[in-house]
Amino acid sequence: GAVVSQHPSRVICKSGTSVKIECRSLDFQATTMFWYRQFPKQSLMLMATSNEGSKATYEQGVEKDKFLINHASLTLSTLTVTSAHPEDSSFYICSAGTSGNTGELFFGEGSRLTVL
Amino acid sequence: AQRVTQPEKLLSVFKGAPVELKCNYSYSGSPELFWYVQYSRQRLQLLLRHISRESIKGFTADLNKGETSFHLKKPFAQEEDSAMYYCALSGGSGNTPLVFGKGTRLSVIA
Image: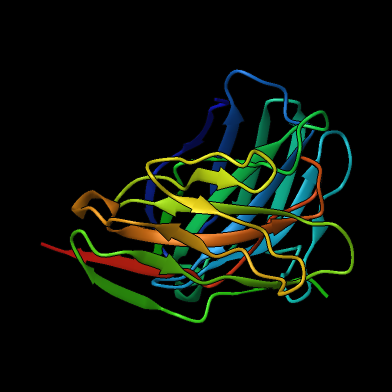
């Protein structure tokens, strides 16, 4: 199956700093990538949809100036958490699909962000 | 509106007992339904999808459009089945996001 890789898997940062998380599709081209957030013992909440070469579409309630998403190539999308605060601490998961595929998405291993 | 409901947060069964994880959905169209599984400290992975009609690790799920359900079943639970299970819905292409239920944690007791 297709492989999606995220980096870093864990990151700890100080409040007020910015953190970048990378999501790569290793063996396929991802025309669309999705960023999810997962709180402890809760489900995955869609944050935004990023399409290669265009602006991301954010879900209601997600601050686009805080969570910057860039999808500059067909194999890489980045999520930057700007001016992070402790409440941004969470598990962030990216997923990717291809236009030729049915609705299946392939998931990265997730990135755990802890803001001190 | 798209919605996936998994009524049980936690399901505990004994090894060898049958398992049924419930999933109901609402969608104004023809959705694709999936079950994803997340084992401890591992990434989310696809378990099965309704269009393939296959059995994976002994699990099956039948899409019931009349009841808008996609329950996951296994006749005999095994300890290694203990995991978090998510039912998910898609509009049908890789360009649309999955909508997830809240998940059910299955615990198989030896």
